Image 1 (cartoon, rainbow, N blue to C red):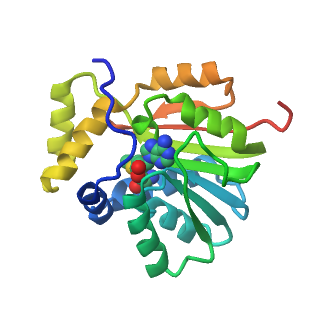
Image 2 (image 1 turned 180 degrees about the vertical axis):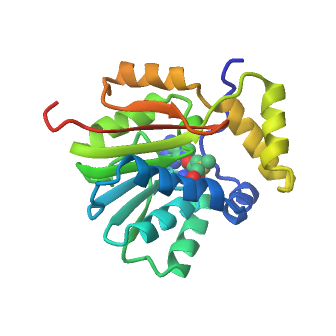
Length: 224
Ligand SMILES: C[S@@+](CC[C@H](N)C(=O)[O-])C[C@H]1O[C@@H](n2cnc3c(N)ncnc32)[C@H](O)[C@@H]1O
């Protein structure tokens, strides 16, 4: 089954609200745990770049897990940023998390060299995946760490429907639809490997970690 694109930005009010209010405890904690598992010795006291932060749920969990970092969190949809602002204020993290409105590949408000770049579930939204990999190339410092997690495209629409029934049976209709379309828009691990090769990012690896998630991760060599 080929990839079926979905709109890049989640800028509908209803869609953004449903996404922001959904309980993503399990996958978003898994994001933080996987980061720790893969980079157990990585000191996280730098400024972290979070690409496509949405309502900042992953951003806040990451900031809680690593209390010495600052986070620049980038999001292109104002509807999502509204919920991100509310969450960051409620969590009293306005001094640690800078929310940035920017539609990638535009990146004027970002710093040049981030020690850590993270992103959850942005890749499948991008019509051109090179947008993510070019941003990584531009913005990751030498010796910096990159950790990306995303959905993985199933082999068929029937399999995508089965995964929705398995993992989102009790969710509102709008979220089930989102999940289904996101899976159809997602990439296969071998496609991400190819994208990394084309972008010249040989230092990142790709791995399937569940029946619906993949990760791409690595540390940029100091001399490239
Ligand atoms: C599925 S959400 C994931 C949000 C968050 N990372 C999370 O895991 O909860 C993807 C987010 O990426 C944003 N996005 C998509 N394309 C973008 C772009 N070109 N620049 C900035 N943000 C983008 C969408 O608006 C949406 O909020």
